[in-house]
Image 1 (cartoon, rainbow, N blue to C red):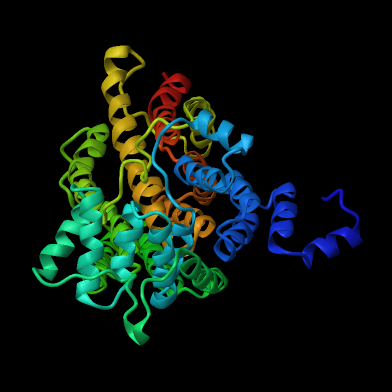
Image 2: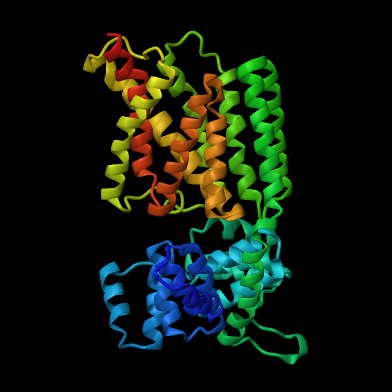
Length: 460
C-alpha cells in the first residue's frame, strides 16, 4: 500500500531516477531503489543526495562507508554522513557499483563489465576486488598483469592474483585505463562512470537471461533425479548417477576456470560429493551417530580446499560475529524447528539415554558436523557462489531447493517441504546479517532435538 494518491504515484513513476528511488525506499522495495540509485550516482558521481540515499539500501558496512565518504567528499558539512561514519567507526570501504560490475561479468558481458570496473578502480584505486575482477575483463596479458600487480600491491596474500601472475609469467604491463586508441589518454572519472552507467543498466536488465540459469537448472534437475533414484528405486543406480554428476561438475569447472560462472560449478559439486560419501563409506560397523563424524572428515577437507580455491574471505562466507543479538535469537529458533521436524519424522534416538555423559559427544558431533559444516557449505560457499551468478533472491531459493532435494532420502514429502522452508529462512538470515553463526546454532539445535532429546524424552 502507498499513502500517495494515484496521480502522485504516476508522476513519481515518470520522474527522475532519484525521485523514483525515494518512492521505492518508502514502499519497502529496497532492491529496486538500489538499482535506481546506482544509476543516479553512475550518471552523476557528484550527486550528494544519490550517495546519501544509496547508503541506506546497500548491503554491508563497507559499501555504506564508501557511500557516506563520497557524500563528505562532495559536502564536508553534511551532518548525516558524518554521524553515520562516526557510528560505524573505521573500517574497509567498497564501492556498491562492484555488485553491478560483477553481474555483467558473470553473464559474459565483458565489455560492459570492463567499463564498470574501470570506473570503480578510478573512483577507488585501492579496490582489491575491482582490480581483481578487471583482470578477468581485460583482453591483453599486459593489462591483466598490471591489474593483478595492483591487487598484490593492495594485498600481498591474495592467492588468486599470485596464481594468475604465475600463469602469465614475466612480461610487460600497462594500465587498462590508458586508452591509446585514437591518441586518447586515460579516461576521467566522470567519463568512466558515465559509460559504466550504460553497462550497469544493460547488466541489470539482462540478468534474467544469464547463461548460468539453464546450467544451474540442469544440474539441479539431474541431482533431483539422482536423489529420487537413490531413495525410491535403487541406491546403486543413484550412486552411479551421482558419480557421473560429480565428474561432470569437476570437468565443467576445469573447462571454465577463470571465466565467469566457474564458482557456481565447483560449489555445486558438494551435492553429489555428500551423497557419494554417505553411500560408499564403510559405516555399517559403527554406531549411527559416528556416521556423521566419519563422513564429515573428508567433506571438511574438501570444503577447506574449495574455500581456498574459490578465494572467498571469511566475511563473505559468514565466518564472523555480525549482528550478534540477531544471531542469538535465530539460534533459539532451532528449538521449535527440532520439535516440528520430530513430529514429522519420529526418528529413532542416536544416543542410549538422556544422561549428560551419553549426550555431550553426540550433541557436539551434530552441532559441528551437521550444523556448522553444512551451513558453511550451503549458506556460506554455495549461496555466495550461486547468488553471484543468479542474483541474491534466486541464489537463496536455488540453494534452499537443492538442500531440500538432499532430504528426499527420508521419504517424507512433508519433511522435504519443511526443510525447504527452513532453508529459505536460513538463507535470508545469512543474506541479511552476513553471518552463519545463528543458522549454524539453529541447525545444530534442530538436529539435537530431532535425533537426541525428543526421541529419548518421548520414548525414554
